[in-house]
Length: 255
Ligand SMILES: O=C(CO)COP(=O)(O)O
Image (tube, rainbow, N blue to C red; front, side):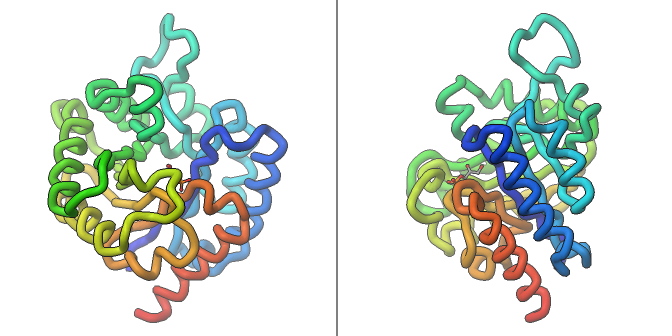
């Protein structure tokens, strides 16, 4: 089984103290866990910008990657409030979320700005965690077609510049984010499977992970179609993170 990416964005849920407490607890679980020690799972955490410098050493000791929740496409200049991919790379950031549904809905993120950000991340050796997903619940075929259109619009600039590197595609159906439960297993498997097939021989080294009310119990049901899990609220209890690592390990043992 290829290496799985399992991690969480803390969004803006926690302040500084709770971010560090959560990261220390999850790092302790990861540092001891056979799925992480054996290289089966790459865990990651995506805190707020100001917590990144404190989170990096804790995470790195536990072989966890650290991500940012956004970035700006320019390297420097008069862009008040923004953070460049260049500076994030200096801080040891390995991943950057780009185009999360909350940013698209609340902060005017468009496919055009997403494409600029994806290219900037790749230019600085940061793997984009490119968030895509259909807005309304519907047939899996329609969702897959919409996601592939969104994916290609987001990659337009990277493709024009022949960018190479690692790409993480986070399939997050918008209607399943912040919901009581994730999208149905068959829906996730169909859309994630179509995205994987679309990216199979890509110049970018792509993985597809699922997010949207994901928690313990989901991975074993969708593991044939995804390369990992993108967790939100249901990883706020560090034990839940550990439970999902257990599931990843059991899946490998079962194969
Ligand atoms: O948006 C998500 C991860 O980026 C998912 O969040 P929830 O799991 O809290 O719905």
